[in-house]
Length: 412
Image 1 (spheres, rainbow, N blue to C red):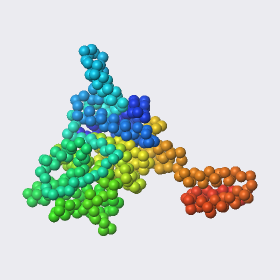
Image 2: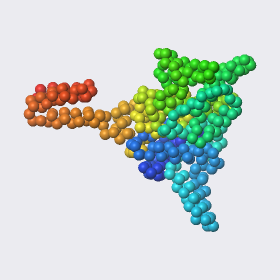
Image 3: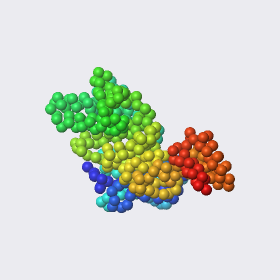
């Protein structure tokens, strides 16, 4: 099985034309270094989603075809230049292909410096997934245990617009039943691996719900799984909020697909390499969960390179081993992003002019105007009135600023 030093991760990305972004180079990590994750930021309309979709198209090509993107483009250019008998409509299709596959030019590199030749040779060993911003887990109910090979086929080859996460409950039911069968048949290793899967899932749910007492309960009478929290709350995977549902649509698909790879390889310690593209991982999540989603995913899947587009400073600053790149300004941040404040990131990578709200901006502007009045007594009186009339809108820091101005005026 392939390891992280043999796998060609995304090292850099040239954006030739992604509509809003043109002629831009995105560095991810240096040659010979361990791979880094990529977090794309920028204003609305800066091209984040377009870049992810273009990258998705190219990785699918290099994942399913014997030709890499670059080889395919060169072949099309050669046909355009040399096939003089081709119909105009055929040549137009070739030219369209050149344009579509040249909007971005990703560079994939291995730590061992061997040349890149696509992903087809690794196809049954790696993970590739793209999660759009509009996602929600809609877990199908379970009526019985299904054949293992039939379920594996559904997970490996889902129908168009069908998420493997839909079959998560069925997958759990099958694993729970086979765990019992393995134990009955004396297959200790199989039963052990099933038990470890459920223990890891329960531990992950405890982190997601920020409740160490979280337990996963299986009710065999109706083939249902319940998430039980220590405060007494109890719910199924179908009853989750939109935020948890969006997150679990990512988590459950990756858990199942990686579990399948491990089973096929007969190696339950295998951590597969690959790419996970996520558009707006913060969708529907409260701020604390936005900060936790990438650390959770990168810890669970250490050999997957996460490439995400986000509007959230909490996501952008949540992990150390990442390059944060602003498509609006062309600026890149390395590890210092993890040590930046949310307000700093909002100004430098999300197009917000300053860290204050519009209400606070207006108050600050009025404070500065009053401080410049020539009549200091009148300035003090108006500042005191401002404290009374606008005080309920002031944070402790902003109130301190007004009080400091009053003290300064009294000294004068």
